[in-house]
Length: 403
Image 1 (cartoon, rainbow, N blue to C red):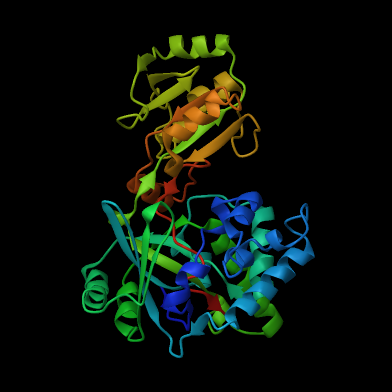
Image 2: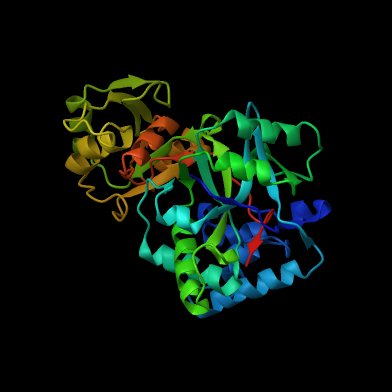
């Protein structure tokens, strides 16, 4: 059963929320972060992407990067822009964009739950990224960014959320990129939430596998250094936003390929009996749309021979029937012939990349469903790389957990 841990969060004073809030570290590169942080000395990007304040070319894992991140966080928390709550609290975090709204519980999850698979995963983590996040957490003595988790909702949890959001104005309201509105409520009456989540059998990682794993590694290391026991220290917990799975919004994670010859493309079209179309997005599962030389084509993916849950995913069917046998892409994690474009950037970005000559071909995917993710996780399987793009994203810098 799930453990949640109320904590004394650091929140910006409402009038400063726009100054500090920023996109998560893993949706932008260093160059993009530097551009976004121009003229914004208080942006939280200086904490999660501290290399932007160091000489160009500084390696991302240089000691100075971690030291700078810790220095920037300490400076920001002492600047008068933030207050730390005096009582252990639970926060409600709402995302609203156009016709979509999702409302979740911002709290801390237990490293113990992660280690014992109460929190279920669907993705492999890379040691180099684990090392990087682990060092940031240890040096800053903080979990600066939350993880997005999902769960099967209960009437109790929905009731507690609505009781708070319908009777109080939000403490913070911030409008971010793409018109996404971020709202935060707070309560120090946390027992109802803790008890309700204790009845939830499993939580599921939606976005943030490396932050989860790094939090686990930090707790293991500090436990040994302090001779403490599991669960008794603040570093045993890491910040999460728990959204009900029926509110989660997954966009396609599209593909672009660098080298595709005319001959290979002709073979692809003939083999799969592709049809030329005007529509850019596939209309149903089992189909992909291909962009090549300023034309869109639709093709149906073959049914997998192996009927396990992972093999039935469109991303797996694409990999096994086209990317590897026709384009020679055996490992999409490392192959330089393929790149990935998050669904928020849309098919216009696919056309732009191909028309620019940087890539020869683009693949527009049908989005993976939240139920597919849950089924994969429940069976202890792993999703293929770049299977899901959750949108909208949680902002960084609005609630910080220190230990």
